[in-house]
Image (cartoon, rainbow, N blue to C red):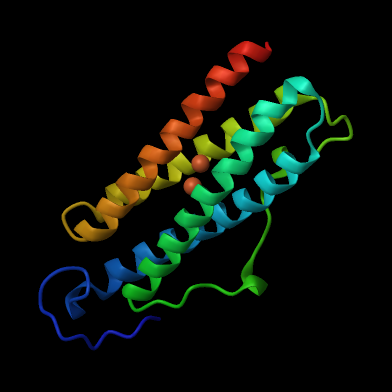
Length: 166
Ligand SMILES: [Fe+2]
Ligand SMILES: [Fe+2]
């Protein structure tokens, strides 16, 4: 449990909000791991894809790695600010079965679909965080809204790619 003796009576850091803070920390930890796994999956798939048709997708994925890593850092920082401890790697459990590099490195459509699934999962989870923060943790909410905007942009970008590949 996070430390609860704080110096402020208002907002999410107030002692009265200890339970809400614990709930938000759990959500933020999950978000952190989602970003870290996405970084791993995008690095591997960007390097794994082959072929002229794959080139632009591989470049887009490689560019997103930087952005997703930035999200992970933002979540870790916010966990710390809420009296939490950013999780260590031993706590990591992989979930992205749909983004494992493929035996056929020219199968771009399957990678694009995997990216869409990852982005959709992030959008769903971050929407939950935004709702959980409403009225009680404005700063986390504001941060996650910014990140949600990025993920919605990623989703739409890869939806457009998919339209071209199908
Ligand atoms: Fe992200
Ligand atoms: Fe994303």
